[in-house]
Amino acid sequence: MKSIRLFLLLALLATITLVNFVALLHGYQSSMEKAQSLFDSRLESTARLIAAANSENAVQQTIAEQQTPYTYFQIWDSGGKQLLTRSRNAPELMPGELSEGFHEINHASYRWRNFIYRDQHLNRWIVVAERSDVRYSLAEEVVLESLLPIVLAIPVAALIIWLAVGVGLKPLRQFADQVRHKRVDDLSPITLEHVPHELTSVVSNTNALLGRLEDAFQREQRFASDAAHELRTPISVLKVHLHNLRKRLGDEDEDISLLKTGIERMGHLIEQILALYRSSPDQASVQFEHVDLTKLAQQVIADEFMTIEQKQQHISLEGETAMIEGNRFALETLLHNLLSNAHKYSPSGSDIRVSVAQKAHRVELTVEDSGPGIPASEYERVFERFYRLQGDRHDSGELGCGLGLTIVKHIADLHQADIQLGTSSIGQGLSVKIIFQQEEPH
Image (cartoon, rainbow, N blue to C red):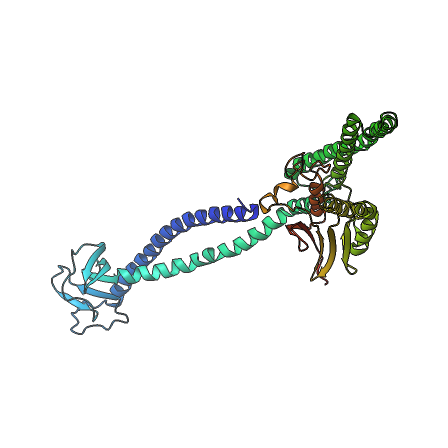
């Protein structure tokens, strides 16, 4: 059932049509019977009128003129042996049995309804007949004209039902509109004026669910904030102790080197997990603003420049002012992750290229490197959490936890942007293109 309104319309119309059909069928039958009864009464009255008009007892040699070919009359003597007079279209013989009352006879290839009246005053028989098909046609015409307005009323009823159901479903549409237009960080209760009894339970249960979700998100945010502090503190302490051990034992000690690698990996994992939490569309409290993507890329490149310089890599930025609506912190995180990946997986002395292009109703951010790249068959999997190409023991020897591109994907989803992976134009490395859609000017 795709539409409650359409379902109610069809159900009510089907019910109305069925009830009207039964009523019309019964009305048609009873009206036809009533019409036939009226025609019979008219036929009987016509016979009595003819008897009164032809009061002479003498035999008339002339044949009376008849106004319509659909009726005829005869006047017979008392024994029914001699035809005294008749209409022009009447037969010269007695049609059927000579007995008083109504009869069905055949004449001139038609079925006729006749009435035989015994004139007691002049002692003779009056026969009046009417074609049955004409009687039925006239009766049907009268009956159908009375039933036609009922049939034509069905489309009018459909329109009224459609409008009435629409008015009745208005609170449901208001409820759906409020839910649809809520931001990801808006868990306030839904408020409706004049809530119908049928929606009271739905609204109250939905508000109760929103309340529970808000409590749960607040607990998770408090947990993330506490975890950030509690996890960073011991990492900092470990780094201090590691520094002291390096002074005591020297940098060449293998255990010290392994411990340093483990602490750095743990610190990187914690920072990436917290960044992933903050960048999730369903967790972040999004504050969008006008952001110049080119200027922001310059900032991030400046922050990462010393790290890139250590590997004697060359980085370039191409683009002009390109304004988008976005969350500045989230976009900084996206650029940091893309540049960090490009730097880590590109060899010393290689090139990294960042470009920002303003196109029709969209802005394209592209980061290309000179690293080993990613096989096309792995493009979908690299966005999965904790998935890392070739596992933890990557050929590059770089630290990683498989969350960098996952965070990029979350931030892109937050901005309703598309991600395209491909081969770099400056080597066999990876090209990551983020396409931000812009609203068309009105």
